[in-house]
Each structure stands twice: as structure tokens, then as C-alpha cells.
Amino acid sequence: MLRAVSIWLVLFQHGGISIIDGLEGLKIGGVGVEVFFVLSGFLIGQILIRNLQQENSFKSITNFWIRRWFRILPLYYLLLLVKFLFIDASVGSNILYYVFFLQNNFYGIDFYEVTWSLVIEEWFYITVPIFLFISFKLARKKIKTVVALFVLFILFENIIRFIYVSKYNVPYEGVNGNVIFRLDALFWGVLLAYVKINFQYIYAKLAKVPVFILAILCFLGYIGFIKILSETNIGINGYIIPRTIGFSLFPMIIAFILPFVDSKSSFSQRTLFRQSFYYFITYTSLFTYAIYLVHPLVFEPLINENPFEIGAGISFILAVVITYGIASILFKFYENPFLKIRDKYFSDRKALKK
Image (cartoon, rainbow, N blue to C red; front, side, top):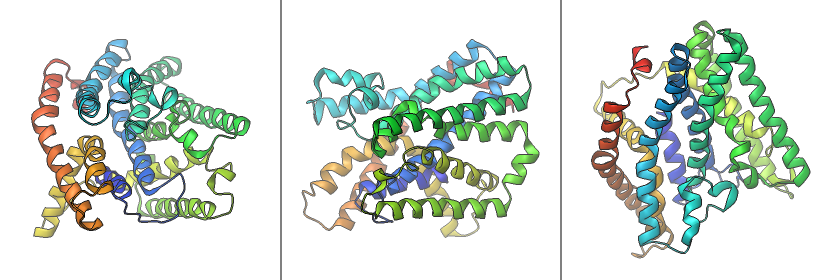
């Protein structure tokens, strides 16, 4: 469900529908991306941790990388090619930055803006298996030591981010897309996954209603805090917290929301409305990746340029319907065949055994 909520927050922002006006930096779509970062770390973390705790080898890491690349690269390269060949070729040979996921730090994201979060995800997929491999080797099956290493990594990220921002007075957006300073957002999800697998009694307590309510209040409180800072004369870039510790604090709050949502994963379908809602959430979650990459290619001509001169609400609905249609076709006839090849030749049996 959170995956569907995340993508819809992005769609609202890029469709010009602002649920909360006045936010700088952490716009409503950015909130959706932060939720997705933590959720991705949580889901991917469970797969990796279970595999590596059974067989902490480079073979396991390689298998994980291949499976991730089968999931991420085919659609990414297809739509990158479509944009380059049929929409905008002005980037020229600099398209190579996008091919190797280097645009955030070395070129710029103007050519295909939404890929900034995908860059962070991709480098996370590359680095987190290595981190876990080393952590498990150092800890020698001492699970509390692994937790300590996670905490040290997150602390390290905050320290270097603080030094970077303080020394160069980097604005919010300058930190937000920088791969080096954003990995801790996903690592909060991995840490939660580790707690779920190895400290089930703690995870059960985190899934309690009071923890969930407190986390939701903190979640809304942080967004309100950002809104207050955004409305001051100096704006969000005049304050150090949103540009440093805030990038770790907000994902931490989201991580405390996840256990309750995870424990309520089953959904009652007793009424027609609930059944319809269930299918909508399910298919939205299934097509999330395609929706995320496709929607800018649809929203730009239909909403921003508005060639049919129709109302904003109608153009948004039309763009969403077309986006969902293209995403479903891509998933069925393009993504899914690659996933079948992946599962046939690079199975994830260890993760499935649990």
C-alpha cells in the first residue's frame, strides 16, 4: 500500500496538484520518494540479509546484483532510449552519464529529472550487499554487532553531510540528489529489516498501535516543521537541520511507521468498494516502477503544454489514465518477460525458503 501512496504523491506533485502549499525542498512528491527509499531498503534488505546470513559469499552478492539489474535496467534503458531518440536528443554524448547512473553527481538531471532517485537506488543496490558482507564477516554472527555497524554507518553519513553543508553552504537540492549523502535513507529500511529478522520481539513491539500513532504524529510534525521554515524570510536553505540531520531524521520516522503497516498487510475485501480498492492498490504497486519512469513523458505534453486546452483536472486524469495504460502494457509485454528469464536462470531460492 505504501508503494502506491508514494507514487501517487509523486503524480500529484508533477501534475501540479499540491496537497500542502509552500513546502520548499521536501515537496509532496519528495515525501513520496522518501517513503519509497525506506520501503525499498526494508524489502530489499530482507532478501539480502536472509541470503547472506545463510551463505555470506560473493556468489550470493553477484546473484543479487544480477536479479536487481534484470528488474531495473531493461525498462530504464528502453525509456531512456525513447526519450533520447524521439523527444530530446540535445544531451548528446552526455547520455552516457545516464547510462552509468552518474547524472546526479557529474552532469545534471534536467534531461530526465525523475531518474535522480533511481540513481540513489541503484548505487544503494551496489553498495549495501558489500556493506552487509563485510559487516557479517566482522561481526562473526554477533547480531548486536551488526546493528552497531549499521548505526555507525548512519552516524558517519550524518557527520560527512554536516561537514559538507557547513563548509560549502550547500542548498537543500544540492544535498538531496547527491548519492554520497543519501544512502542512509535506505539504510534505515535495511536496519529495520535486520531487526525484523533477528529481533522479532522488538519488531512486534514496534508494530503496536501507540508506536504507529506516535510515528505518524512525528511524520506530520516534521512536514509542518519544514513548512514553517519554508515560509520564513530566509527559507529552508537558511537553516542547517533540514540540509543535514533532517535527511536522516525523516527516513527514521518513516521506518517507525512501517512495522504497523507491514503487520496489516492483509486487506479485507468484503465489499465491492474494498475489493475495487484492493485491486487498484495491488496493480498500482505492481506497475509502480513503470509509472514512475513513464509519467514524465506523458505529463509534460498533456499537462504542462496542454495542447487540447482542457481544464487542469481533466488533463491530469487523462494523463494518469494514459500513464497507467502504458505502464500496464510495458509490464506485461516487456518487464515481465525479463523477470521470467531472471527467475529461471538466477533464482532467489534462499530468500523464498524463509
